[in-house]
Amino acid sequence: MPEVLKAPLVVEFPFTRSLGPVQSAFLTGLRERVVLGVRTGDGRVLVPPVEYDPVTAEEIRDLVEVAPTGTVTTWAWNHEPRRGQPLDTPFAWVLVRLDGADTALLHALDAPGPAAVRTGMRVRVRWAEERSGAITDIACFEPYDGERAEPHGHSGAFEDAVHGIVAHARLDYTYSPGRAQAAYIEALSTRRTCGERCPSCRKVYVPPRGACPTCGVATTEQVEVGPRGTVTTFCIVNIKAKNLDIEVPYVYGHIALDGAGLALHGRIGGIPYDQVRMGLRVEPVWTEGARYPDHYRPTGEPDADYDTYKELL
Image (cartoon, rainbow, N blue to C red; front, top):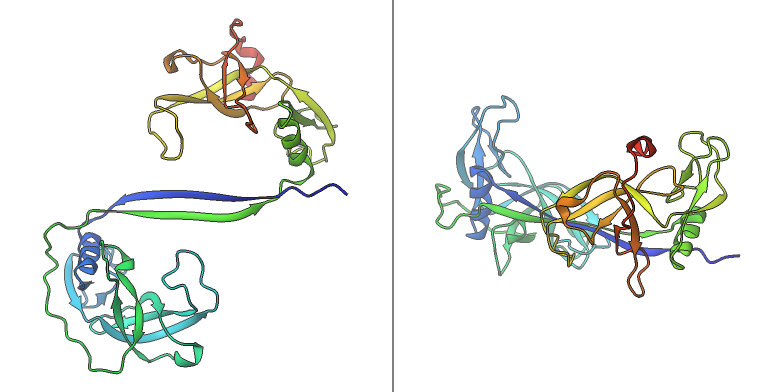
């Protein structure tokens, strides 16, 4: 029985977002060990704050300091913390209504076990030693049996306020390509591109999917396509990616390999970016040890007639 291919994959994107005046004050306050909420028109104090009243949709900016102590309203025990979570030992996820607030804040509670956690227990903020203006400035909550802390009435005005944050979104998973994709990958290891033909509509899918999405029938007949192809459409990339050593601007395009029934995507090089065009004939360029073409370059052939690839746009 052939070995089943699988590989660990990571999809990661550092999302940068700007902050409005309310969120800016809230996160800057955390950096300064101050917890701020916002007061709605009917007098409720929302923590974490929002910029618009969830009932009336009116803009709200009346910032109110609340206490760093509060009460657990509900909780769930986390037996196996994951990478990037607040604590690396088992902890409780808790909703905490801070003293002076009318809504609850979600965060971690450092407790020795689930038996030590209960709804209604008193807790307080444990501040991170190093703070930058993020929700992680609250390291976690911890059990607390002292007096209710009193806020100092901070106005929410800060020097050197935080105006933007970077949220790191990441997904770790194991990918298993299956029969059709495994054959495609195996062909690439020998610098060939193979698709599979639908026995009904005769379209050749590259990369193969194991079944025709139009006809709904299995595909098993392998067909080698290319290596040359035609640029069907493209875009010019002007923003440099941190993990790609490619200078901008560069061109990424859809390329219909000769004999394929749909286009695949790839980078187009060997030509000034402003000379790339629909219909340009290209061929793959491989680098030593690569698992797929590094980019596609012009072949020098005349451009393909539009009618030969219009159905592949």
